[in-house]
Length: 272
Image (cartoon, rainbow, N blue to C red):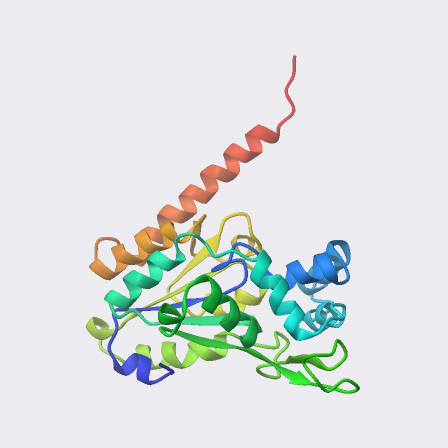
């Protein structure tokens, strides 16, 4: 259900989420690139170029895809065999359905990949509850066919340096909610794991950042998650009014700092 219909249904919570490495345990694009494309070392160089702002996510992602050199159906076959779902995401979707919480996937990946994996891993029935906003595929010369390695490429969602600026989907919600009475405003939540989530995370009330991934370095307030079990518990608390977004963020920051200190202590050299 797209905006503004989603908002018109007056949900208590609207949940936006990344797909790769967030709903799934692996990043589909990184997996293909590392194992069938340019390789992990070169991909990491591209990643650092984005962080250093010497190149855009859009350009580096295009370079990753250009290195795949395989028909699109082969990509889908490999991913179906290799990618797994977070074990608690299905539980979250069952709860979201029962409580009329809209779930919107915002991805820098490609819609056919996401649809294929959700149908395979989640099931067609629950998949119908998810709105997907992502890039598409398009044919290109000389192959001009999804069945040929040189016949397809990505069709980016917009003209931004991200290729898909996820904040552009969330911003209309945030702008409309700002004009609503305080008692009627839904809470906007976001789950993500990488640099393509930065623009979107800033548009919501609380970010769930996967532990050990890139987002926790850049975005505060946030709370970390290891699985969707954590997300489900926190979202239930927010929905039921048991914990505020501020409280969850404060607890998350405290926990992150404690873990960072403990990790630092473990890395200190011992003296004898």
